[in-house]
Length: 62
Image (cartoon, rainbow, N blue to C red; front, top):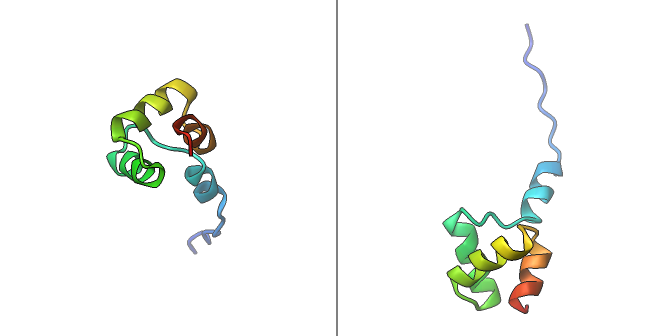
């Protein structure tokens, strides 16, 4: 029996990049460096406005 061909779509990747995972230290550090804020400030912003990257960056003043 042949294995099913796996399609290569960007759907999951694009959705993932539009979010900030507040529980993942590497994502918090990346966003902190990008915006010039501290990691606790990023976590607080994620908790306050949700994990959408645009909202988090707007909250952090970028």
